[in-house]
Length: 492
RNA sequence: GCCCCCAUCGUCUAGAGGCCUAGGACACAUCCCUUUCACGGAUGCGACACGGGUUCGAAUCCCGUUGGGGGUACCA
Image (tube, rainbow, N blue to C red; front, side, top):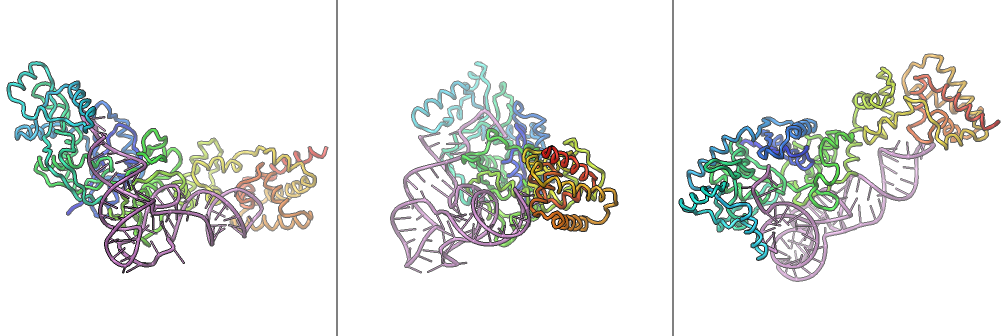
């Protein structure tokens, strides 16, 4: 059997992480089975659907690497098909027109509620006589189309993640509306539960994989498959992504759209990796927790998809993101960081060797690319001295250290500093060791002094490579001279 | 209210009756590495919701309780 799955987002908001995770599972399942992954935009609700959301959804899926094989198909362009199918069902007497007003339906539900009954349509218009219908029509009532659901029907399916699920017809809320109200004998706007089934049949979808929040739609849709004379596909209802309180993650929980994560500096690979881990786990021993979509696809199956919902958590996402950053080559990292540095207004030299050297240095402690501008500040901008640095520089004996290194590095900066980073680093280290014995001071004091004098701060990346990088830019002597002035100002 | 689903460390999870003194990852703590902050390494803390069965044996199977979630539209 050919596997064909689909992701069917509704463009009533930006691409949500829940939708994206459903897309991930669909994608992985399709790839694992050499099947097709179809994208369908469910924009039947004209009032709530917006083109910019469609755009956002498409962009987000592409960014995550969830490339679809067919589509996007737009339901708004397929209305004729849906109406034709409804007409067929109308002709067969499987669906019918119901003339209830919203007020009548409200009143009915209120009464049921008061009676501690489940709100449901009581099918009161299922068997209207021609006279009754005519009377409602002359009254000017606009009918909806309802699909007959027998109370005594039992609907069961073998869910890909949940196993056997059984539903009773009477718990489905009565005959279901499949098209909105419309004038006289027109067919109004077709509704979700109906169009989904028509499309999934038309697009030959073999496995319907969606969030658990759709589970109660499934029995209704199975009935529709039967009514339309189609084969019922497999269904798999994945667990939901939950917020910290354990409820379904919604827009109100802050950052939930894929574009937000992108803007926060997360990499697509890391986010996809994290989403995959929310509800699925690789077979034991198959691979570590860091993996690509392609690797996950090799091992993916619904046997290993959890039933319980998973709470979204930043800690692990941050960790995964950092892992990806650490696995980047210097040139890959450079390609990501340079634009950010330029955007921060830094004067970035056109020197790939230097830039990659900087990336190697910063990459080991970078958890998110957004940290790069601040972390790299001292390599592009003259330092401002922190109070602690000022206090340190003004200590007795510090100025001698600063002066010694100023003279030393000034000489170096006159020369060519060719050779690799390792050699330069060793040269710096040797010079530091020599000065320690010449000046007769402790190593800690020298290192601390150099860091504060050259960068103005007490913490930062490894000092020796930092000096090496800055020597290449010929700013070390200058900075030491400035620090020397600060140190001397204390003596007078 | 009614219907449905779910239940292992704080979080994500492994676990398909004996391999479980319940494994891993994140987070947290301590130590090591280190001039610093990180990174990395090591160690530690830490869970089978509860109650009944079934069985020689249950985290695993059954029932109930509790708790949580989803749904209950002329939205998707």
